[in-house]
Amino acid sequence: MRLHVHQWGSGPRVVLVHGVLLGGREAWRAQRPLAERWTLLAPDRLGHGKSPEGVQDFEVDAELIAEQVLDEPAHLVGLSYGAIVAMLAAARRPEMVRTLTVVEPPAAGVIRGHEVVDAWDAELRQLLAGSLEDPREVFKVFFPLAGVPLPIPDPVPETLRRGARAMTGMRPPGDAELPLDALASAGFPMLVITGGHRREYEIIADAIADRTGAVRDRVTGMGHLVPDVGEPFNARLESFLNHAE
Image (cartoon, rainbow, N blue to C red):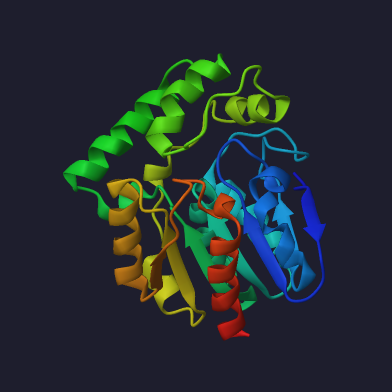
């Protein structure tokens, strides 16, 4: 299963791992200006974009990213489900990771037993266990649950339809057992960003930062779609990358 990888720009390598629904090209459109100074590599995870069909599984995705994309040292950035994938991939090949940035990982397992996070995780599991045949019905539940501050498009474009199909059989993000101790001792700088819109993401991000020693920040304005704010996110990310460089 060979992942398709979109590539733009030149300079130090930055691997961008997308979340649910949108593939690499669409999820990171607002980061294109960074291609003036960085080589951006945006893989399509299985079931998205130009990559083969496949069930979304953070372990499988992490293995593919680690083996196929982290073949040279790079800065690694992950959004949402892709942030979980990025953390697992970084633990597999820490020698290839210059920095790790994770944006709103829905990793409920890191704070299991917290009433607020557990209830949110249960809602997501209920969605994934139900019928996912009608994309618009899926989005009616998923958008507010994830914190996507956008109207549901009508008609639904094929990119989003494929993303919705890829949710069928998706391994719940709350099942992820993140190697936080390994990340803490890996030696590369780590940044955890949230969008300041849902308490659940803030609690999870705080727990990850506390256990790994990561820098903790917020970039507000687009809910869960933090990179879509454009320049404020790009400036914060680039500052972090430049400091490591």
